[in-house]
Length: 130
Image (cartoon, rainbow, N blue to C red):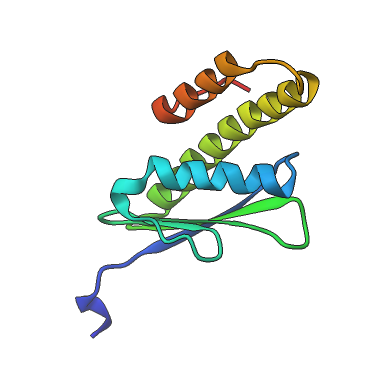
């Protein structure tokens, strides 16, 4: 009976990101928006189902980390999916930190151009080299 089912493999990663709880929630919301076509489930983090794999991104309530769980048809695919989303999280975190710092620094001024830059970054999924 077991041989009649496809084998799947999991990968687990954890990232430490220097973000506030609100900033981390924003990053997860942006990923959910980016993958809206896959109808992500946003209960206890963000879970995105693909045709032959899935990823679940979950922030810890006790540590400043994000846990990444993936499942795919091979260990290599599961690891690659975890790495891909780790890279996306780090990129969004990098930009979110700088955007938050700029907003705090320029609290009384106009920040329209930076808001536009943030929107473009999220929508186009620009990869920022760390």
